[in-house]
Image: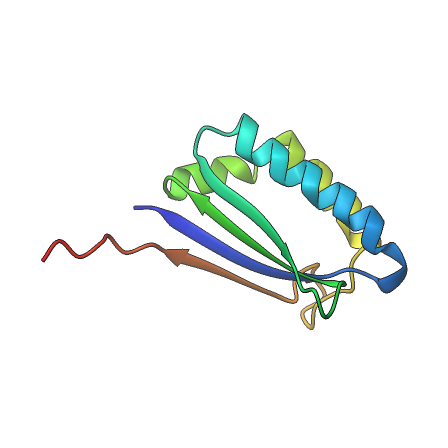
Length: 107
């Protein structure tokens, strides 16, 4: 079953442009190098440029797990903490949800 991941991140105000380069590269690598990555969209709040939402879709749980083992993912997680405001739990995430996508109604 398809897996969707929604992540909220907050860049440090003085590091927004550096984060944009990092996340755009990571998104590109995810979309082009991972067969199981069906979508990896980066959204930026026009009223709050430090606020980002990632919308990722993977073919299944195995593809999502494979994503987390990719060199691009490891590179992103190594570089991102210096550019982001930590979340309440101390991770890079302001929030993170992993969802199972329901099949369409076939009525």
